[in-house]
Length: 394
Image (cartoon, rainbow, N blue to C red; front, side, top):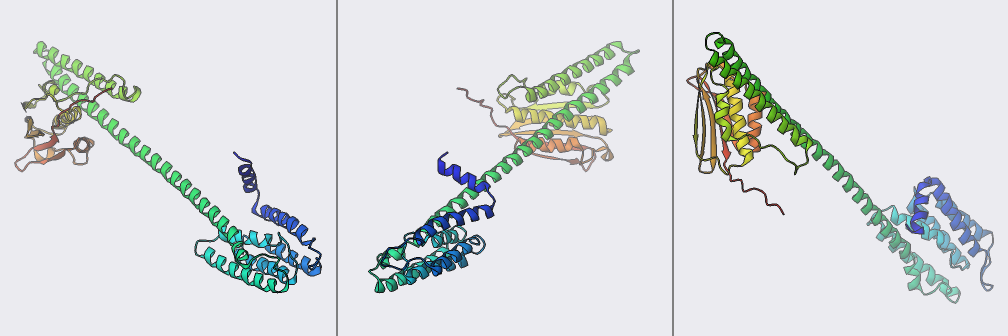
């Protein structure tokens, strides 16, 4: 930081009134010392000289609140000195400060008009003074230029302040946008995690309840069926623990860390088998190869089937259900249909149906669900069966 920057920072830290008084004191010191000394052939300082100086200094106190009137008063005092015959190099310092304030606190429309009036006035005074003395103020053209210097300096400072304010405003808006984007992503991630936990827990509890009921009914009559059902319960519990661990790992591990693979349409047979023996006969039809399918699409299809079967077991009195997964013409069609009564359909506002729609939309597909005219409930989703070409690593 330069010396000028340090001084500017200290001045900005002072109250505006203190800065104004400091400016008046500095201007009074330099202008007063110049007014006190004049060349012998010309008029020396007297009461009128000091009166004009006092008027100029008092006017400068209000330069922030009334910049244009202050410029007029200090300009008139400067012209009065020249016309009165008191010549000095620093007698125009008060009007210089006033013109600078006009520009720095004004706008681009006011500054040119102020410069035009000040230049013309200075030129006229120079011409009038030159008739009586040997033109001690300099050429009229030069006298018309000096008022433009403080105006240009003030314009530069004002423009710089506006740019800095605009940059600060942009930075603030960018920070707000970043925070808003971060909150949006956090919200989306919370919804995604809630959806994953809902799908895993709801399905697992439903499947375990079904198999536990089968084991309880067959415990005394058909022990082998009960044992098979309890094995299904154990497998469902292990699968739920694995999926929950994979979900938590995504939160704990870095993005490039090891993550367990998510389930896909290749695990649909085992998924359907978990509901076996629960009073609903489920058939599965798969067409097309699952190889090369995007993991996101595969997981979405798996979760849709999982949620559809869970809803059938929990909400429907269906006896039969059909699951169809067909990959054809760049699309993966997933359909879950049951023959339950119309009143047994799940509510459209349930978390499961909402989660299915969110999953299908996030994967770039569409989903439709609702009761069938002849009875039953159908869920049908169409997902893009894009090839997963992997990610090239350096």
